[in-house]
Figure 1 (cartoon, helix red, strand yellow):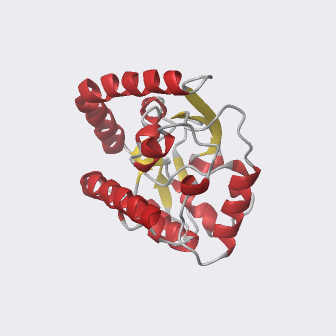
Figure 2 (cartoon, rainbow, N blue to C red):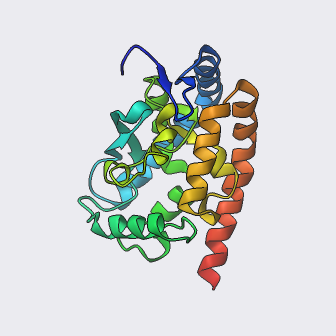
Length: 224
């Protein structure tokens, strides 16, 4: 990444992608969680190898700070060489409609055994802790979007690139799959313009209840 971590938002304010407190908080939390995260990650990797041939990690170009591309890491939850056309069409529909940002998991045959559970609980994103350590992401921030999603952004939408992308954020703890695309953008822009140490800590604590709520929504949707 460029050594200058400052950028301008639409209101003409200078924003800092990773202030010193943010980097310190990210590093502290990762080291604190390492005794749990590392064994859990190894177990997930083993399970993926057992149920599906192919690599454990899924590497994908994502759009980060200032619109720069980086290689985002995830545990692979889909079959190797899965077709992305279906996902692109679904995403296009969500961006141009007023529908909640639901995933295709319930009807997506590309997902490997156990993949839906990993995605529902956010465990597929654990490898992104490496992206955080590399300075490409933060624990808290807007989710990094795909390049073809970015191509359809309006100028207002691009204001979400005013900080490092994150594993969790205001959108995730304020509804996520219950919100629309424009509501997601609004939460992301609000975070870019108001981020602080206490806000990041608050979002982290609110993330686990949000994941539990998301899991409940997923189970409830299957019963309908």
